[in-house]
Image (cartoon, rainbow, N blue to C red):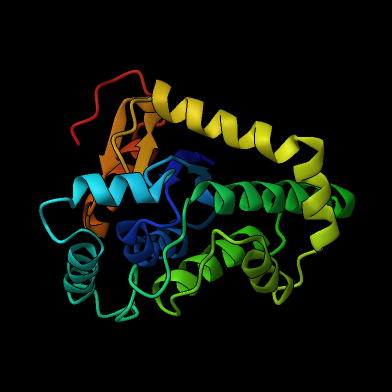
Length: 230
């Protein structure tokens, strides 16, 4: 059976990735085991104070960014955005949440090895969604360790294992690899899907049908020895 490999880069504080999760879920539902999604992280909100004050300097800074996000959210009825986002709560960085999720991914993979099964429900997916909802919907500071632990522990995550992965450097190494690979692949932003060994990139607010036709074309010609018409 042919399997399409997709590297999916995103930043947890990116509203476009928050909205795009419904399309990712649709891909998994439609293609099942014929698609393998490799969740990766890129740094868009590594330093939020610098990013927002510079990029939105002449557009109202945090108030302007808040208005922009609420306007974007109106286009996507399946997501919720808190009216005081970036006003009431201002996470300093997305990197700490990415680091925590790298530790969750490592813990999940170890559990799957022990169980000799890779088909377990993805705790990583659940934690990532909980973090995104925690910020965008509930206006919580997901850059904070205590908030991260609370959200993850509610899903059954072993916080001691997460802390161990971070203290030993495993999670840092994994996150560094993601950030470096994002630079090498010239990832422009969040979210970005990379297919066909880097030959095809879908960036930003890309509709499901566009994603679908790219996957179907790769499934049709899995050898990759001819140019794709997509």
